[in-house]
Image 1: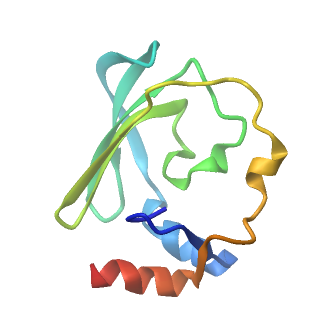
Image 2 (image 1 turned 90 degrees about the vertical axis):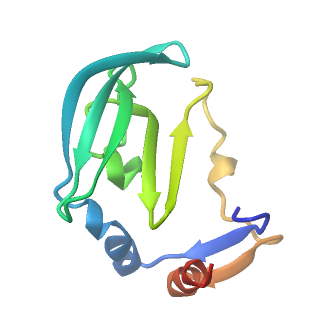
Length: 132
């Protein structure tokens, strides 16, 4: 959902690779700083990317994702990120976990919706972002 619009963006393997190319070679270096987030002890790390940019992430080693590919940004992180900030152009967004629920998620949650969404290609979604 973006600005109140429900969007279904179809991506090919090639689109996925293009979208995540900037995260290739990302290196995480722990800073030694810690804080508690949602009841978990988290370690702060700086993420340095090939283009020279960087961001900070707080992650816990108490939870290790079974599927490291769940989020391309963090596939080389040795834990689950519970807080991070990303900056794009003049906009900085901080994502922070407020609660973790370990209950199983029904498989139906992963079904592709058939109505109520505006469907677009990945290229169309990129153009939409540039217009804003």
